[in-house]
Image 1 (cartoon, rainbow, N blue to C red):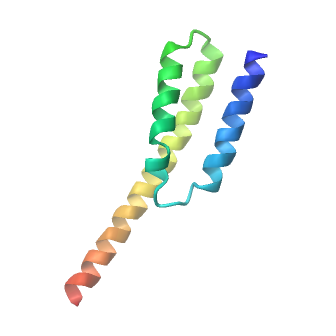
Image 2: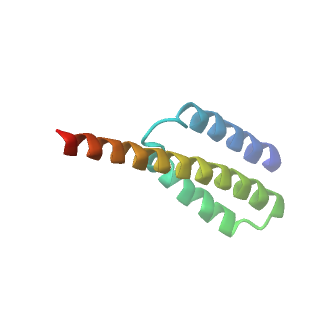
Length: 85
């Protein structure tokens, strides 16, 4: 039963984050979730749960990095256009 609960929780979090994955505020949205899941992963004694959380957190982190990179490019474009004005 615990296995199913953890799998369903990950599935629901994935669906929720996938709908917001292109939002510019994605890194801020996932901050609290990441902290709670890292704490769960650290305190969990089941290796399967730790592996699932690690994989999930790595995917979230990869998307966070992508959004941060896109934000930086957008910021550079805005600064360049402001200098031209």
